[in-house]
Length: 66
Image: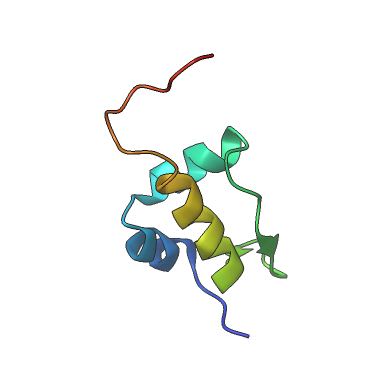
């Protein structure tokens, strides 16, 4: 299984590290596991979750409330 650093995930998803941290703080994406140094260790599944959240709607499109 491959593990990725936060900066690598940000590049793959096309956002900044700060954006990933904001999504984590707000609970928009699940917190990845951490290693013995307490660094986040991201997996392919974590990257897919980030991409799903990022692509959940078209940017600039208003959410329709019903």
